[in-house]
Length: 220
Image (cartoon, rainbow, N blue to C red):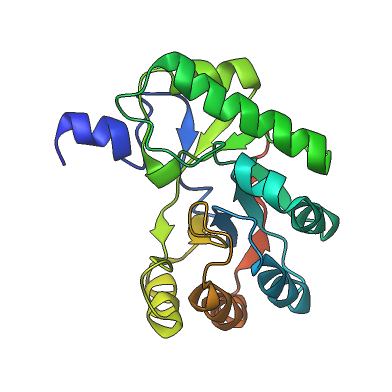
């Protein structure tokens, strides 16, 4: 990965704003995170998480929150953390600073108004950051979050996603999955649901504890 590509997409890059991709590798804990929701299928995932008494962090798109306010509130009511994933899920590279700020600000306002939760974490769509992201995060009180395990659940089967997570996850991991597919109204998230149901008990058997991003990173 070249220097420019690393700055934009590198999981450990700090070039375009403060960001984390991993927790403390000495602690047996793991954060499950879900991007792009909510959607009509999110409740199926909530059922899996409730069955196993797991709290996760959901990075929501503002447009999807406005489309499914009752589901967004259900995520909150189940005790999960809500993060900011922009308003319309655009690529942010080559965008003006004003555009980037508006994307984050509208999502922040929408999430807070509809769910009552004020996000403190931001995940850039596609993991792509750019000039202006850091300033927008600072203005809105947000900190960037990437991942060290990407499930590829938007294109792979549940068993393949499960295998990838089990191979990559460990102490301090932040696992990125998706309870939506960008702004689709009714996407098929069965691979995500199936993978979550499979990996949670297996990771617990390894001695890992599930935490939210805030529980993992605190006020970092």
